[in-house]
Each structure stands twice: as structure tokens, then as C-alpha cells.
Image (cartoon, rainbow, N blue to C red; front, side, top):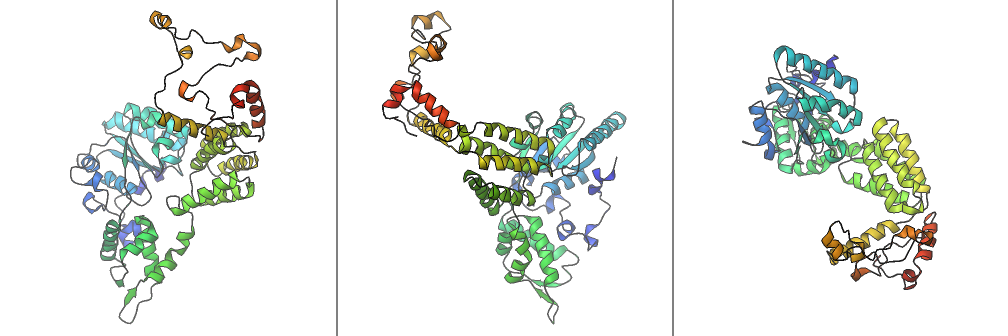
Length: 451
């Protein structure tokens, strides 16, 4: 087994003594009492604290934004548990690594009856095949799995695995939390504490770091080295220096911040606006910034129905195949598959008629709930229902010319409503012509509807 599987939890290292190790790592908490934030999970009597104190570890997922303590908790657990502890990063690991951990866990269980815990950082990066490889071992108890993710596990973890794990949500760190982390770094880090440092209000750092403790500490370290000591050896880190330090970071795509929403908005609107060049540009911005390709693929799935719709029904099939292929292939090749889907959807004829139809029908369902089903459409599985003439007047469409007969399918209160208004874009024009030829009476009444 290659050492990268578990050596990141080696307790013999002293990161605080090594200036080449980033500040965020040098001051990382080693005990629960040193942990800042997440009091709802790590406070006295809270579930994750009890898990560590009692060494009673169950399979869990830690879900939260970057820099809030997911990996720190795993490191603390590794140093406290009597179980064999393994670690994988989903970006670098594959099915082979997973199977090697499982094999070692089985040997440990047979020889010493010890438990084995596997921590997988960024578990959302594992594809279905990689997650499937874990399922039997978690189910049988060979492995206790701890996964850390910044993405919604409902979308990123396969249901059979998710059903065997408990999800804990880690909250973004607030200004007070970051102020305490900052205070400890200034006091406890051997290199920084050796100097006198003047800092601005921590609220400004909170804005720059976006609640990410790792980003805050890395920014602080960079600013510390840029600040020139005065005659008395005091380093002043002011707003201007911090803005300079964080400038590059602030221009990068932040998949949990405002740029995430701005860029995905530009991406969707470019495709809706039939501009494939803009579509692939914003796609490149997101992928280069570290966005999960499956997040992009999900958005394309929605767009294919919402904005292309029946103007080109192939769009939805292509988007579905794109999502599946991206899940199987992963980056960097997934960018090619996504680019094909983006350029196709952007170039396709557009219609939002299906989206408008469900929105209008949804509104009527809410305004007029529980309207009765017309009696001729009702099911009649019992004699009583047949005696009540359920389904009696129903006309079987295939018994009529053209496999169509006009009859009422909507409840009485909305029987003349038209929710779906097909456009004349692409293949939807054929749909429009067919519906108008079939439902002459319905459409001749002025196409009533709330769409």
C-alpha cells in the first residue's frame, strides 16, 4: 500500500516547526477543545464530540463549505481513535486505492478484531463505480466511512451508500469564529508571534476570505511576509495590503461565493441566448476555477427542458447522456463532453412552452386544490365503483379514426384551460400543428389558459 493513503495523519510531524508548511496547517487544532466553530456538533454533549470522546465512530458525511473544519475533525479523530485509520483524497485516488484499503481492513479485522476507519476527502469527486466499490464494506462493517464534501450529498453520493451514512452539516464560520482563529494564529504560531503585528478589524478579513478559515490564514501569512517591519520591528497589515494580498484570490472563480452565482447565471443566459461561444467561455471559467463538472451537467439537464424543450427533443437526451458520461469519465476529459453539450444546446432552437405549461398548471393546482377527477376517467376496480358508473363513459382512443377522440380530460373547473402553448420553433411547430388539428374546438375558443 502506498504511503499516501494514511501518512497525512502521522502524529510524529511537528508542522509548527517547519516554515515551509502553510500557516493554516501549522496552527490547525489538534484537540476538540481547540476547535473553533461548529458548536452545534462539537460542543459539550454534541454528537461529533461524543463520537470522538467515546471512540464510537459511525459512517458519516461531513457536508459544508471550504475551510470550516471537515478535514480538521478527521485529523482529530485519527489521533484519538483506537481503530486503524486510513485516508484518501478523492481527487488522486481510484478504485484500486479503495480496494487496497478494504483488503487491509479485512486483514486487520481477522487478525486483531480492530475496526478500520476510512476518511475520504472530497468524496463528491468519486464517481459511481468508485462509490459502488465501498458499498459492501460499509454495509458489512468492514469499513467505517467518513466522507467530507462541499457539495450536496443528495446529488453526489449514490443512494445505497448515502442511506447507510448520517449526514452532519457544518456551518459557515462567522466573524467571531474567524476573529478567534486569527487571534490564535497571531499568538501561537512560532514565526508570526515572534513579531509585533498590527491588524485591522477582523470583519474586513471575513469579507475577503468569505468565511473560509484556510483562505483567511493563507492570506494573513502572505500579508505578513509582504509587510515591511518599521524601526521598532512592527509589521502593519492594513486594508490596502490585505486587498493586494487577496486580489488574485478574489478574481478567481469561487464556487461557493458570489462569482459562482454570477458566472453560472452568465453561462445559462448565454446558452439560452443561442451564443455557443459565450457558453463555452463561461464553461471554461467554471471548470478552470474548480467547479464540479457534475454540477454543470445538472444545470444543462434543466436547461435542455426549460429553454430548448420540444423545439428539439434530442436536447434532453443529449444532456442526459452528457451527465452520465461526465460521471463515468471525470476531469479533465469531461470538459470535452460538456463542451459538446453546451454548443449543441446553445445552437438548438429554443422554446420554454413546457416550462410555462407546468408553471401555469402548478398555479391552478395551488389555487384550486383537489378538484375531482371526471367520473368517466376514474378507475373502477370494485363492483361498487362500477355501480357508481366510474369510467362508464370513457372513450378508448385507439377505437377511433386516427387513434383520437375528443373528450374531457381536465376537471370541470378548468376544463377549457390550455396550459401548453407550443411555439413554431424547430420540431415544436409539428406538435403545434398536430394539436390544433386534433383539438379544433378547444383551440377555436381563443386558447384559454393561464400560461
